[in-house]
Image 1 (spheres, rainbow, N blue to C red):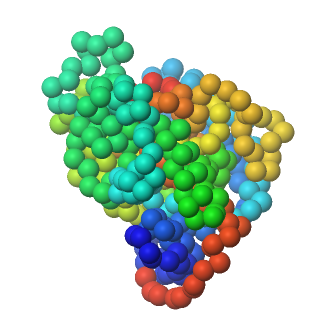
Image 2 (cartoon, rainbow, N blue to C red; image 1 turned 90 degrees about the vertical axis):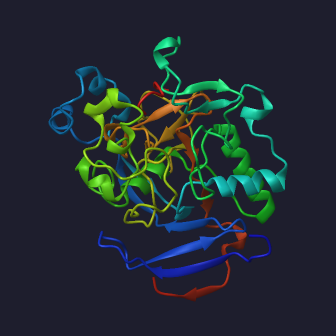
Amino acid sequence: MVGVKSKIVFFILAFSSPLPAYAEEFINSLGMAFVLIPAGSFVMGRTESIESMRKVFPEFEASRFHDLGDELPAHEVNISRPFFLGKHEVTVGDFKKFITRSGYLPESIKDKTGGYGFDEKYNASTTIKKDAFEGRDLKYSWKNPGFAQTDRDPVINITWNDAVNLAKWLSKKEGKRYRLPTEAEWEYACLAKTQSRFGVGDDPQSLRLFANLYDQSALKYWDKWNNFAQKYSDGYPFTAPVGSFKPNAFGLHDMNGNVWEWVSDFYSDKYPPDARTNPRGPPSGDLRVRRGGSWHTWAFYSRCQFRNWNTADTRYTLVGVRLLLEKHSPATQSKRNHQHQGRSNQNQ
């Protein structure tokens, strides 16, 4: 909101999950909330065996487990500095303010190829790529994914380059440093001091309280994947307004599901053996990493350890972003008060 000063709020999180008693929250000039994530160490990558996962996900064929080699080796990582991470994914309303105030032209419009979107009449079997969504097509963009969104829904159909430009614009505007989180920072925030599959537990069906995933509410549109759908219906066949589900122990919403989130790293099919403190991924590459799963994703692919990737100019109906704000940024010294309170896109 224009003219509203940034502020830091301490609030009591009233949820039954094991949340901290207080979390520190920073509100920026666009009204975006950022939660303070403490420094710490964690084990990055998959620690459980394929045999253990097969018992939990018996519906998956063997090839899907063999494709998980890039989650290895599990290794200890130290995040040496606290940072602020978006409490929510960037919303349609946030992105609209950015476009309006900056004059930035998103890639789907600038390159005149459009994005991807949902059309109930679209038949994937008649296309070469067999993609679950129609595109690229100029009728689709961040403004129109083919289904209704509110300003509180996560923005989608944005590229990695669009996400980086949003961070750069905010940095210049506010005199702070916004950026995409690294893969390590993202996974650390997703796990939230646990070593579980989803950061909020191990049982896929328990995600009903925490994540907007491919479930019974989506079967009306994609019934051929019935075996992979969650057993419940959360009422959201498409994106859900951010904050509709419970947060993890760090106070972050939608770290699993809703939309895939771009991170800063180039993709590599194995973790570097010597990067143990604040790793930033390979110095170069052709692909960028996205994490967390989406509203159209099976629980298997929304695990905190799962890695996905695309080219930096990819725009898709399942992909958005969550920004990081570095804690040592100048204007985070503000008023305080207290108050109570890639791989294939298909099926991923």
